Every structure is written in structure tokens, then in C-alpha cells.
Image (cartoon, helix red, strand yellow):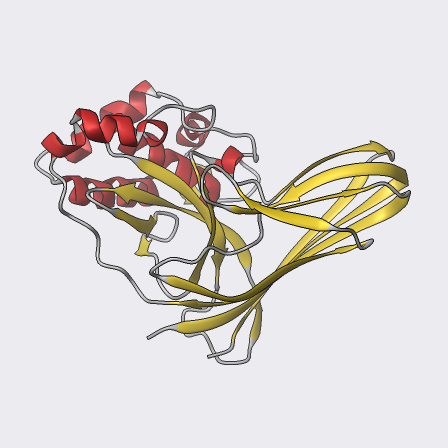
Length: 280
């Protein structure tokens, strides 16, 4: 059964002194695919400005805008209505021999390589090799995701937005971003193409109609084992009705919701809120 969910993501900056100009890009527009249909989506700013959209290299919709009038506040609201479907059965077609082929290595090089957030960690690689023994690639994806869920404790403040999979592994604590990066490190170490997905998670499994809940930005992974399929290692659950997919990339650096530069100003206060309402 599908869900229809309204999303409101508000980001507000307050500057101690006027900003004279700023250049910004946001990734707040949900993607459409076989599991998710975007009914409507828009991004609004205050002060109002002209904006334009483009699709980045990874297939994420980006809204870009700039301001050239002095301002002490900037508000950006991403509003969407999406229809999500339930759990999608994992794709299990690919064998280990298939994943070692030149065709797969060439096609998914960027999702097999190491990054600042997903480094080649010796300890995690050793764990990955142990986990994959006797398993198919699809089974190894589930084993790696569940291993991260079991090893980690969800705790805010231990890691930061700049922490890598290695940092989280050493701390054994972190947030959804860390769970996703650690799972990617395990999967890439054994040759499974895997990518970082960002979006939202409705916090109420029962999803009462018309009730607005304080949602949260969320991260999970997609793995390729003959086709792409998703899993949420933070909660150790398949991606389903409550997950709203926005952006995809190699790691968090490719999916940052709000990026920009500005001149003027003197420090900025930041508040972010996400509200989710199940409509049907």
C-alpha cells in the first residue's frame, strides 16, 4: 500500500550584520523512480529571488539562486508531496564473478572507490571479508547493514558532519550519516557497488492520517547486485513507505542539502526544521 506524504523542510539563517551578496544551491526536491512519485515540489526563498533548476551528475535535482541585495535573514523552504510505495524486493541476480567483471568495475567505478567520508579502512575491510563468507552479494549487503546496526549506538554529538566511516567505527557511536558511511565502506571493500542516499524518514510507523510530525533528514544506502535496491542500516529495516528519497551520491559530500557562499555578515545563526504529514 502506498503513502502520500507532504514534506516541509525549512532552513533559516540569521546574520549579525547585513550580507551583501550570496550564491546558493539546495538539494530539497525528491526524486521520482519506480518506488516514489513526486506529485508536486517547489523551493521558495525569503527574500524572494529568481532560481533555476538543473540535474547534477548523480541525478539529483538542484535549485540554484543568488541574492545581491543586503539582507540579515535568509529563509529557504522546500515543500513537496510525494507518493511512496512499500518495501522493494532486493535484486539478487549478480554473482561475485559478475561483480568482478570489467564491465561492472567500469560502469560503477565511482561507487566502488574511496572518498574522504568512506576511506579504505583496514579494520572495516577485514570485517567485510569475514561477513561475506558463504553469502551471495545480496545476502552480504544485508549482513553488512545489520552488522553496522548491531555494532553502533545511535547518539548525537559523538561525531560531526565531517566525520568519516573510520571515525564512526572507532567511536562505535554516531547518527544515520555515520551508519550509511560505515556500510558503504564495508560493501566497497568486498567489491559491491554502493551509494549514499539522503532524504527523510517519517518517524511514526503507524502513520496516522493528517497528523503532522516532526520529521528528520535521514540517510541510508543503495547497493547494486544486478540492480539497485535500498536498505536502512540505522534502523535495520528495508526502505519502504516512510522513506522519502531526495539525493544520491558517493557520500554525504555529494548530497549536502544546502551549500552557499556569501560576503558581508558577521556570523550566522542556523535553524532547520522538517515537518511530515501523511495525507493518504
